[in-house]
Length: 380
Image (cartoon, rainbow, N blue to C red; front, side, top):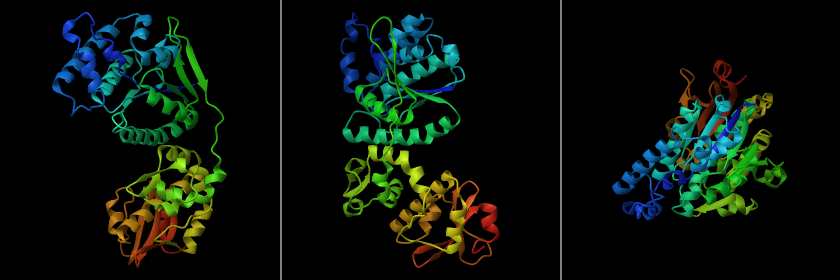
């Protein structure tokens, strides 16, 4: 079975290159430690020079080294070699994602590992550094984890449908990221990989546990959760009953927390594929509801309800002004030609909703394939 290997990236591959016998380098550790959370733009020039020197040393160390030496030099590569039992040629058809911090040091280390894997023939390798991810502050770390969860949700389910086996290689990286990904991996990974410390570098594999979200606990709040997922800021009174762990407060508005987003991602397909939800500023005609009921597959229903939640949020923010919908590139909101005041917006490629704006709300008429809706956008 083809594999997707997601490896967390630390910086020890860089710092291990500092020559302890060289007095000129005695301050390098402290300089790197003090600037570990800085991105490329904010990293001082002297530190950039140190990183460049250490990167060159790392590249040279890995070039032509024996497998045992490579595994000792890089925790990340140690895990990957363990998965392939020291034979990287087995992974030429696999996909490798390297998850790095959004810092100069993290991205540089990931670049070293990525270049090395590509030289070994593992060409389907790329680096993902979630925007802002660092340990500079709790807020920065949380926002980075949020971006990581969004990326995982956008990436992993489709690869699973394509019959890839998902590995989380957590041998490298810093402990706080490992802790989060160990939990997140229970939802997304088939196996989580660690390595025993010592000469043998024995692989530890933790299989995915049969964890499932108790959907019944959050089903009564499907409407609120759909709005929160669409970036609606709700008041505390509007989210009463939703488990506290799923919520965070920003500027006196409730949003989905990191764990709330993770939990919602696991159960939204079941919840949003049921009855059509009512949203603020949207009115459904019988023809629209009939079109919805004709669709039996989960994903089209889910995507429609997510789109309706987004439209509702935008209209609420604009006071019912549809100009805000036109500015949203994904919706492609526009008027039909020669059909009076009838408009339409996109759900997915080739799927449309026809509608009309009236007194600050949208009246929805039809939903379905673009060519079918376009033939008769007002009624069947």
